[in-house]
Length: 131
Image 1 (spheres, rainbow, N blue to C red):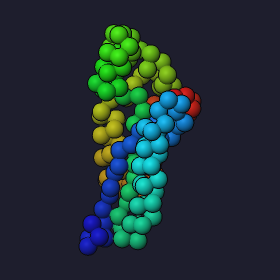
Image 2 (cartoon, rainbow, N blue to C red):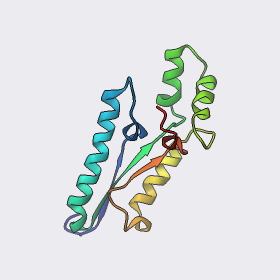
Image 3 (cartoon, rainbow, N blue to C red):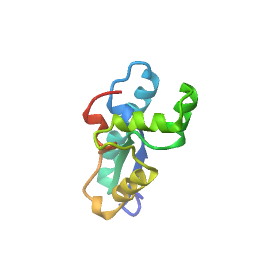
């Protein structure tokens, strides 16, 4: 990338790094560290034409996001998914495609002047500041 003076790095973190979370201090801190690293690398690599951004996914309808909590709570997948969707202002959880499309955008020339950004792909969840 440095030789070509062009490139895009897209890190994946979590919306947890954007919010304060009571019982998940190690997790939220590690995700916030990825955000800080993204901004630092963006500043360091900008003179070389390399952009560095980060995606912070929110409530995603995935095995980690829904199935694992359902097992831990002894609830149905549907109940957990409905509870999580109710927390999202857009009324539903995201999918892997939402994150993939954000990554494609940030890696593309359409994002040629975007660097050091943490893009929340969360349906507005972080706007509510609830964790």
